Amino acid sequence: MTAYPRYPGDVISPWIVKLLTGLVRKKHQVSVFTSSYKGIGNQTMDGIMVYRFRYAPRNLEVLTHDMAVPERMKQGLKFKLLVFPYITSGLVHSFNFPRPHDIIHVHWPVPHILFGLPMKYRWKIPLLLYVHGGELNFLKKLPQPLKQIFISFMRKSDLITVNSSYTKNLVESYGLDIPVEIIPFGNPHTDSKMYPYSQKNSKVILFVGRLIEVKGLDDLIKAFKIVREKYKDAELRIVGDGPLRKHLETLARELNVPVTFTGYKSGKDLEKEYLDACIFVLPSKPDKIGQTETLGVVTIEALSYGVPVIASNIGGIPDVVKNAQTGLLFEPGNYHQLAQKIILLFENPLLREKLVNEGQTHIKTTYSWGRIVDKLENIYLKLLRKYGKVTDLYV
Image (cartoon, rainbow, N blue to C red; front, side):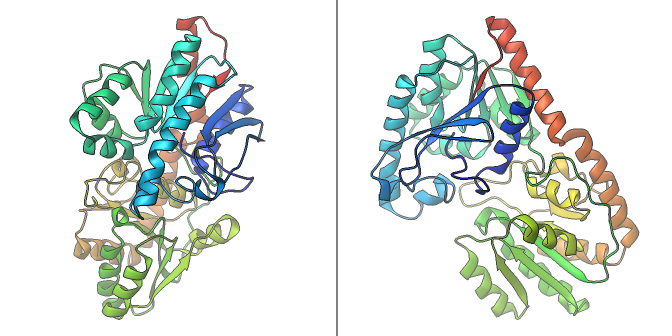
C-alpha cells in the first residue's frame, strides 16, 4: 500500500488500521509492505509488522503520507519525478522481500500490483486487489499501451475487493472477468459505539474532510448563505484542511457569511465537533478529471455520532445515505436544493431523529467493523483453501 501510520496515533489511513488490527484480534499474522517517509525504517505497531522500502534521500521521501499522491503530484515537477524511483524501488524490494506469506492483498493496485505480482509468483499464493476508486481515474489517464499493461496485470489477481457498489461497477466496466466483492470501511474512530440522537437547540452545520475540489465545499458555502437569510443563528463549521482553504475563506468573505474554518482535528476534539452538530453535510461532486466520492466514510462517522446527514447523490454515497431513510440526498452542485434540505431538517426534529435511528441500524448491519472483518476473513479462507495454504496474511 502507499502509506501506513508512521507512529501510534498517526492519522494515515485509519480505516485500514481498523481492518488490519481486526484481523490481528482474530489471531491472524499480518504484515504491511509500504513506503518509507523521510527515512523511517521497519516497525512493529499493534502487532503488525510494517516493512518500509526507501526510494529517495531522506529529505525527499515525501511523495506519500502527508497527502494523497495525486494531490502531491499537482504541487510540482519534483514530486512527479519521485514516482519513478518510488515504483522502481518498490518493485526491487518486492523481489527481495524475505518473508513468505500465504495471501497478498494489494491496496491501490495502480501501481502497486507491480509489487504484488512478484510475491504471488514467487510464493505461489493468491493475490487480491483492493480498488479504492481513485486509482481508476489515474488508470484512465495513462497512455493506452501502459493502461493495457496494468489491466493485463490486474487480470492475474484472484479476486478484487472494493469499497462500494459504485466502485464495483467501475471495476466491472473494465471487463476483467474476476470476482468483485464489496468490503466497505466503517467509522475509523470507533469500533461499534453508537451515540443516540439528541435534540440540539443550536443550528450548527458540520463538514469534516479534506478541503479539495471533489468535496464540493463551494456549494455548501453558497447554500449556507441562503440558509442564513432565514436563520441568522445558523452556523457552518468546516473541519479539515487542504489546498482550497484560502479559496474557500475568500468565498465566504465575498458572500458575507461567517464560516468557521477549524483546521484539522482528531480524537476528542473531532468527537466534540460531531456531538455539537445539528446536521452533517457532505456536498461532494466530480472534480475536473471526473473523480468523485467512492464511499463517503464521514457519513458513517456522522451517523455513528447521532448526527443526521445530508449528502450528494453521487458515487458510493447512496450505499450509506438512502434518501429519506438514512439521510437526505441532493443533486450534486445544486446548492439551492441543498439549502432547502438543511432548512427542512432544521424545522423537523422528528425527521432528524428518524434519519439517525434508521441510519444507525443500517451501519450496524453493513458497516460495523466486526461484520467487515468477518466478511474479509471468509474471503481469505476460501482462497486459502483453494490454494491449500494456512492463514497468515500479507497486505
